[in-house]
Each structure stands twice: as structure tokens, then as C-alpha cells.
Image (cartoon, rainbow, N blue to C red; front, side):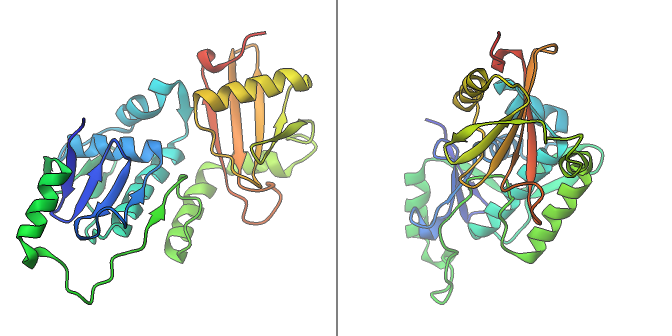
Length: 264
């Protein structure tokens, strides 16, 4: 069993449960983390005070699963870590961006067991927040921060999205040269899936195999465009939370290496 981390004497991080929770509200007010968000946070805390490069994080979190993601996905993961820490009750920004170098944690870290920290908290009531303080509600962070409801986070996400996905939107909005030729292969788990390959049965098999090997976050009402490149032995998937020609649609792309590609 992995040790848990107590961050700045206030918030518990349990890597195995992928959750954050303020010590005084444990465990009812936990913030559940998406897999890559939890893994990135664990690496930052394990190397607290050290700068972790983008290359290292790509390799340690995504590429070991056979997935290649955009730089935008990494920045959104870091933003999701900061948001989750704040929602768990940590006011300080303990994850810093080091320009042209990477990211690092600057937290005060203690490691141990949940039981130990809970007992210490009970033994030191003066460290608890005032009675008038209401801890933040339980929130499940099931995706990268596409669904932020606050204007500040929404604006930041929009800027990052626009900068990194300009080419993607050009393709999506120029229908004659973009995805108009993609064939619908069915509604899978609530997600409308389209494929560049006209063999519907084969396309369904490839998409299903991908969802079993790596989590494709396409929820009900979403749409996924799968590009099957048999010449490069790879498959890429562009996932949008709604049809890309609808205002406010948000998308991300993932490319899978050969081991995730179904051979002919």
C-alpha cells in the first residue's frame, strides 16, 4: 500500500484512491481525480522541490500506456491539479510552472498513513478551521478541466484550447475538406462515433479495443472522430463534448501507437 501525503498540513492525497480531501472533512468531502491528474500530482509530490520536465511527464504518465497527447493536454492536467487542490481547501498554489523548464511542487509534505494523520488532527484541535468555515462540497473531477463553471477557469481553458487547436477547428469547420467524409459507425456508450474507414464492423472493433486499453473520455452527447492510418500503423481519436460546429464545443485529440492499433 502506498503512503498518503499530507499537503501543507491540511489536505490529504491518497494515490491509490485517486482522491484529495481536507483533513477535517475526511472522507466525506473528497475530490476524486482523473487518472492522469492523479499520476502527475503523485510524481510532483514524490519529487517535491524538483523541476519535472514536460518530456519526463509525457513519458511517465501517457507514453507508458502507449498514448501520445498534445502539450495542451499536459497544461490542462496541471490546471486540473491546481483546481482540485483549491476545491479540497488548499488556498496556496503549490504547483509552479518553471518557464522553459517544466513544473515543480513547492508544498510542505508529510507522508504516512491516513490513520496517523487523522489521529494527529484529533489530538490538535487548534489546527482545525473555525466552526464558521464550511469546507467545499464533494466534487468529482472525471475529465480534464473542460467543464469548469467559473468564468476565470473557463477563460483560461478557452485560451489554451484556442492556441493549441487552431488547426483542428479549421478542419472541423471546413466540412468539404475535413470530417464530412467520415462514416458513422454507431452510438457507443452514449458517444456518436465516426470513422475515416468505410468498413463499419472493422471500425467498431478498433474503437471498442481502444476503449478497453485506454480510457477515451467521450460521454453521453459527445462525438468522436477516429482516423485509422494503416500506412503508419496508428490510430488517432478526436473527442468533442458536442458536435464541433456548435458554439462552445471543446475537443481534444489522442494518437495511439502500433500496439493499440488493430491489424488488418
